[in-house]
Image 1: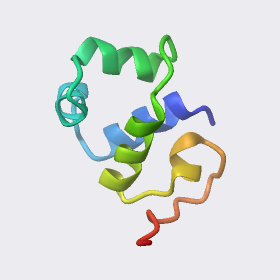
Image 2: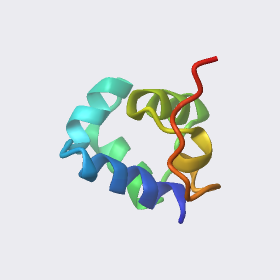
Image 3: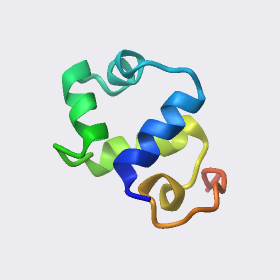
Image 4: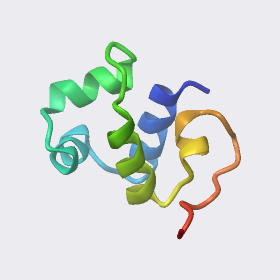
Length: 74
């Protein structure tokens, strides 16, 4: 699964809006919508933030793995 679909699915599974996540990332809702649609690439620092926020590994959130491991503590 591509990361843009994964970040959308994870957000929707937690009943969060694009605006809530955009606010956490200090970006506009339209920018975040572009990340989810694949129009714009998600910056690595945003990917790391989302992985920690959702407590999911970067591998899972990026689509490199289909196993939803937790974010590593160290």
